Amino acid sequence: MRQLTPLDTQFLSAESHTTASHVAGMAILDPASAPTGTVTWEGLINLLRERLHLAPPLRMRLADVPFALDRPYWVEASDLDLRDHVYESTLPAPGDDDQLAEHVARIHARRLDRARPLWEMHLIHGLPDGRVALYMKVHHCAIDGVSGTEILASLLDISPEPRLVEMPPEVPAERTPEQIGLLAGGLARSVVHPVAALRSFTRVVADLDAVPLASALPGARLVARATRRLLGDERPRPELPSLAAPRTPFNGVISGERSFAFGSIPLGEIRRVSRTFGMSVNDVVMTLCASALRRWLISCDSLPDQPLIAAVPVAVRKARGSETIGNQISAMITPLATNVDCPKERLSSVRSAMLAAKRRFAVSPATWLSDVCAMFPAPFSALATPVLFRLAGMVGTGVNLIVSNVPGPPFPLYLCGARVLSYYPMSVLTDVTGALSITCISYDGRLDLGVVACPDRVPDVWSLIGHIDEAMEELTTLAKREKAAELEAAAQDGATQDGATQDRAAQDGATQDSATQDSAAQEAAEAKHGEVEGVNAKGGEPRAAEPRTARPEPGARAAMERETMEKVPA
Image (cartoon, rainbow, N blue to C red; front, side, top):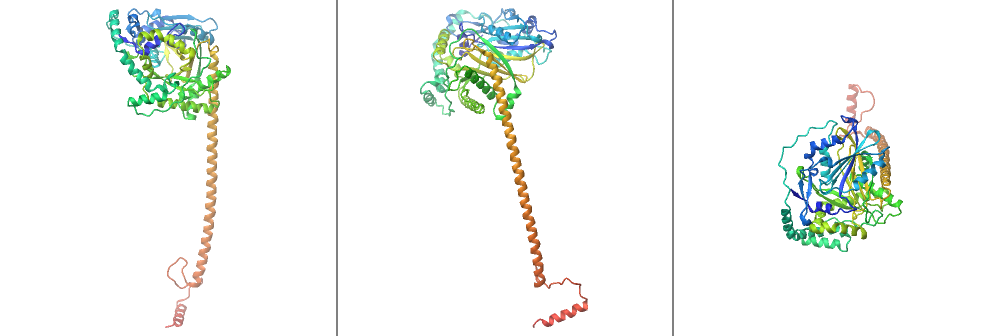
């Protein structure tokens, strides 16, 4: 038995008639590689029975504390019936993307039954070319992005042939906790809660300038600096830009209806842009979202002068195995540069903003989100959270939207022998975080995107997928131009260097030729001078010049020497 954390409990408390706090994903499967040529309801049930022990969140249910005096507990669901969690449906012809998205959106809008383990799986037939879709949702109080991918990994295989999974040894069934024990524990924790809440409050105030809504309060940065000094924390904190979220059409109170759109982008194109401009893949994804949102807001004549503010979930999970249930996440808050007109400048602005957010996150406590949730006692949180969220949506907004990018496997995976062609993730909408969320995952050479919206505020959710495609084309064109400019500049530099080299070579050759001619002339002059003065042109002692005639006979030489000696004075 394990108690939910304050953050886990907050996902439960945030639920209302307009908010469903589960995360989900829709996989498109090609059954051609499956042994039976199809994926069936019975096949999914058998797969879950064989591998349920590998996915703890699918086996657990909630045990509430009487009067909601304390946070609930996770307990094993001894009466789990998989047939209550796996459903099957068929789309009417032609079963296109619009029909599929509408069908999935209706399922996504429904809340999970808290009397059972908090998950559902829906097998959807009727897609073109014999494909099938599998939609699965799990409550956010049970999983985060990392543990969600671990659940998928436990059900998937790397080949059409399912792997053999060893069954765990039998363990005694966990006893259901007695209500009196839960009540006593809740009373004891309510006594010590003020001390724990004060510690959480102090940590939150120390980073007040990085917390949504609170960062917009007058003097938030001064209060944060003063609190850090009092706590003895002298580490410098990188300054953040303004995190005040402007009002947009998709911010405000939401309804309980949902709409859904999905699409894919080749991952190679994103990486080409990231290499060209020296930035990360995630920075490019954030720029795509910023560009798409800018286009959508312009089409609505609602583009604010200030940049939109996005919350980017960050995994801080370290646990594995049986500790994968629950959330271990935080969030970075960053501007999206939707107010920048030039695509290249927007790309640079997003990169700079993400770098500043990462630097700040690296030196700040990663627990601010959990600390905010831990400040309030469980009874207050359960009763007041829906009301506070509703009021916040009416008077302002914490962030404009949530943008999440989860890394996935670069190779294909299989479910019941069927190849997973794509996987489109889906997230949560609340009054505080806006009526729009964009979630991405990289898989098998593509970036798959899922956009969830409230149709009352975003009536044309598919247009956002179109804007994302346009933004990708824009960045691809920009990268090609940048590369061409680099090659042209390199060619010009090479031509300039070659010309300079040739000029230097010609100049050196001319200089050498002139020097050679001068040297030859000098040698000739010195040789001539040596003939007259009797000096060796190459230096040395003076000697008699030798005429350029035939050598005299010995007798004649002796006569010449005697004649010379006679002319020398004594």
